[in-house]
Image 1 (spheres, rainbow, N blue to C red):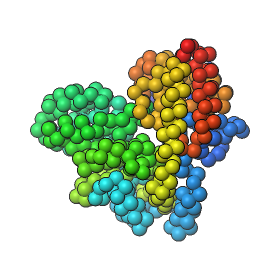
Image 2 (image 1 turned 45 degrees about the vertical axis):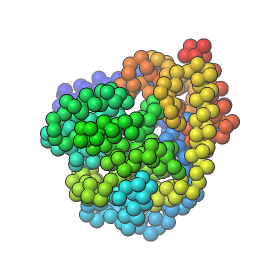
Image 3 (image 1 turned 90 degrees about the vertical axis):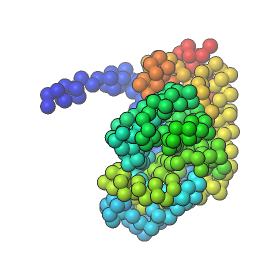
Length: 394
């Protein structure tokens, strides 16, 4: 016991940041998650949210949640496996399967639960799960829970992927990759991944947490963007980004979903997604398909921000999407820049090692459809001002 307590007592990193006034986590927001949020009694421009389409405060989304609570109550009081499957869960699953072009879908309580449950269910002893070295942490944790061998390949490197697959024994092989990579905003080379997978008899799973609502026709995701939904065996998505709630789903052929439904421990032994969340996601999908102007506005804002940052001399890495990194170097610089931007009325997130390689800390910027052009320009004025102050840009 003492060894465990010693580890707890020796954890001082966060406390030191708090003492220095540079702690930028668990900030308390006093308003809805929109393009402007209230913190400490003042409004700041939110550039640190995954609310890409700006739907968390949409009247139809909120009304759907209220009606569902009135009808079903606040929770399901059990797991999907036993007493926690409502008719609206099934309706949402049909809607999501149609959205991403698959036969069937299965809804989980969180996006992380999807990756934990699906990878565990599919990857058994003597199987291999192959992941991009910068895949999301939930994918890595799903690999750790499985009984298979985890193999990593160099980021978006198809030669490395081919060599990694060639080294696998002739058992089950599952490639799991983000559609849009969450830290640097670049897009997986899915068509090439599918080609390499086919040569080696591997299945492909796309974690499209950041792609749904952003890429593809009407926001149908990365697989639709490339026109390869039929070649990607499993498509995963979350509801905490574009779809304005919490939860996640996996979509595939009917037999695969049937199997996962009965094997995934994170589904069977976890409480069901509550009615209000289910209904709000369903409404958000409808709004996303009806109001395509939101995705167009999101990309307009993305182009403005990218141009402003690059013209000022910021290193925006490989970003191709509304997730835009501004590389600042040392972890300390990221913390100071985050604090200074907040003082100037802009909320951003500092990303440091080990989330990125040491010496490549960044300010992670993410946009919403509901940001006005004036807000984007004002935020970029502050980015340039603070970046020059700290010597990040000339």
